[in-house]
Length: 326
Image 1 (cartoon, rainbow, N blue to C red):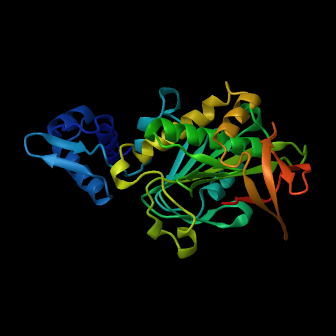
Image 2 (cartoon, one colour):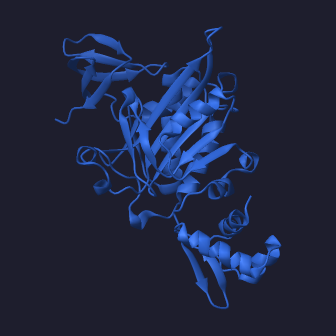
């Protein structure tokens, strides 16, 4: 850890409190001038640090700058040494995570970025990922260390985790739109993408990469005109009482622990409770075909049970749906 990172870690641990440069220098066993230079570097990088004569330095409680150091400080004690790859800018966290998985990265390896230039959504679509306001994270999962193995169930579980964490930290209620999107106040705020790789020789699943893109405070005007019509954000400027570091750490911690105690039945019950499509009329897109139906249930494997306009019940497990507003 560099001196600058040590100073940031110290400020994160004492967020909101003013501490003199002398005390910081003493705690880190460096000179006051070194502390001052580190503070100046952090300020240039966008950290909101308040300096008051005779009181010292303080990292603002409302500072929303994301960093590996900040994330680690918010992690549970057992995960503070997790393998984390942080990037200010990257093409795609899922792409990087897949590269790391091929190289033998361990279960729970986290790839996190402040901005993506080529974020990936379902069916290879571009996932817009503006800087400084969102969370773009990917986690490598090993099947033998994770309760769920089917991509649909992992996606469903992750949606439940994200919704629970957002509710706990912000009080905001997110709705889940089958299968991989979360909405707030009628607009999409989160997308989840699960990608799996099988072992060539055995044919068994070797690892999975779970990607999460969450619009924390991204203003609609930041997105392209087409996306502006669909995308929203979880928090307004006035709501920013929780940092992105806290959200990332809590999502990551919960993701890697809750599956051990949440069986498929309980998980799907929670998923259905948060679902925004249950008993709703939807327009289903499947390839070149589209038709109307009503969602009657979601089974234990995450498939929709739909009722067609003719009154027939069918299982639906691929494609996309759009809730019809009457």
